[in-house]
Image (cartoon, rainbow, N blue to C red; front, side, top):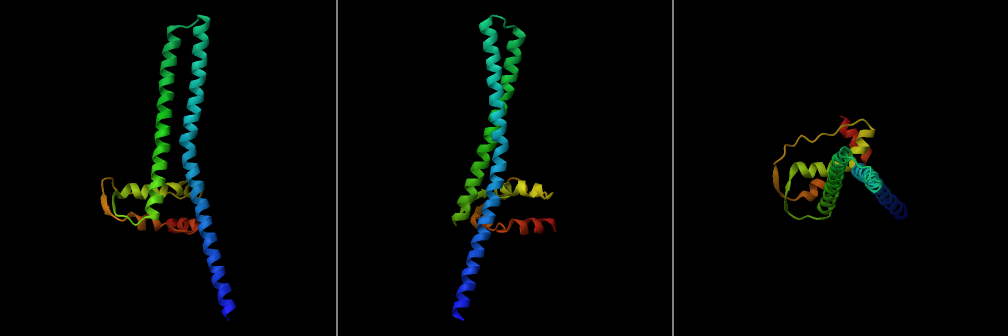
Amino acid sequence: MKESLFDLERTQAELMQAEKLASLDAMMAGISHELNTPIGNALLSATSMEKLFDGIVQSIQSGTIKRRQLEDFATRGKERAELVARSNKRADDLIVGFQQVAIDQSSEQRRRFGLKEVVDDNLAPFQPMLRQRSVKADNFIPPGIDCDSFPGPLTGARESDPERAVARLRR
């Protein structure tokens, strides 16, 4: 009898661990997907800027550069530089949000936080999975609602089973 109870408890602990790992896998896939877009945009823009520079350098070296070519270079270069900056800012914002979620989940510290931002940070890793299942999660919390509380329980309240979370959102 004791052996059966021990086996049952061990099996339950193993199932809980497997569920945690599955949830972590889903979250990591979401984080990777969310970061891939801004990083990909920045990389593509930087590569494009390299080609712009190569072209302008060749024209300068050959002595065939024209005013229109310089104007086009400046315009296109500025647009690409702005895209690189926006993409890097977006990636940085995502990383800061993910870090804050991790801190909040492991800490029970009281702090000031924007309710909308905490909810957005918690939804971000799940957005790719939700889109794949044709589920849209909108955060209708208006900006400017500041809380002085313990965000840990809010961030830690995420559904541990992503499939159940999606099913609950569909209702």
